[in-house]
Image (cartoon, rainbow, N blue to C red; front, side):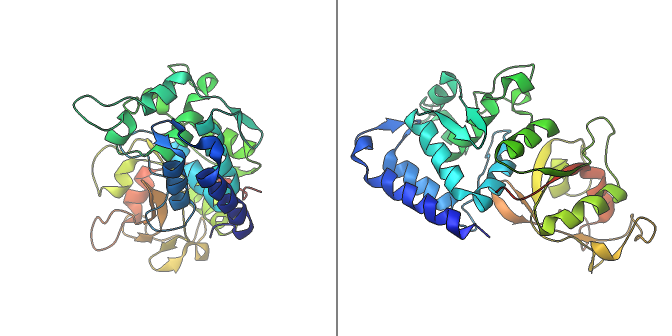
Length: 295
C-alpha cells in the first residue's frame, strides 16, 4: 500500500507542476509539464497498470527499485523526476543523480521510420525513461563497459547486487540480508527460506532468470530482477511452516507467489503442469536482497 502521508505531498507537487506559470510552454525529455504530471499521477495512483515498466529495455533493476520507492516515498519519487525533467539539481535521498546529456537527447530523438521517440518505440514511457535510465546512467563507476543511454543497450544496463543496495541505501533503507549468488550458478531451498520472512515488513528483491515466467526449459542464467510482492506458499502451505530439514519434495512440490515485474504487480509464476513447480523456481532463483522499508 502506498504511504498516504507521502502521497499527499506528491499530489501537491503534481498540482504545482500542472499549474505553475514557470513551466508554461516548457517541454523536455519529449513531454510537457501536463503530460509529465499525468504520467506521474498514474504511477502514484496504485492502479493495476500504473507501475514502472522497462518495456523493451533491460532496466529491470531500476524498475524494481522504483516500484518500492513509489510505495514508501511517492513524494521523493515525484519530486526527483520533476527535478530531472526541469534540469534542476536532482537528488534521490543522499544520492545526487546527474544523467549525461545523451540520456535526455535519446528521449527527444525520433526513432527511425517512426513518429515515436526512441524510448516510446521501445515501449517505455517518458516518466520511466527519465527516472530509470537516469539512475542507471549515473552509475558509470559501477559498470566498466559503458554509460547507459540508449534503449537497445544491454550490457551497460546490467544491475549488479551492489548497485541495487546502493540505490536503496541512498534512499534511506538498510540491507537486512543479501544471499544473492553472482558466482555460484543458483541459489537453493535454504536461501529461499532465509529471504521469505522479510517480505512481510520490508522489501525482498530477487535475482532470477526470466525463464521463471516462461515455463520449463530454456536458459536459467540470472538476468532479471523482480520484487516479491506477497507471501510464498508451497503445496498450499505457508513457506514458514517448513524449515531446512522439514522440507517438501523439491522436484514435485508446487509453489505459489506473487511478484512485481514488467509493470505487473501480481505476476504469477510460470505454470509447468497444473501448478508452478518448485523445482523450476529454484532453477531460476539466484538469491535476493531483503531491505527495510524506505523511511
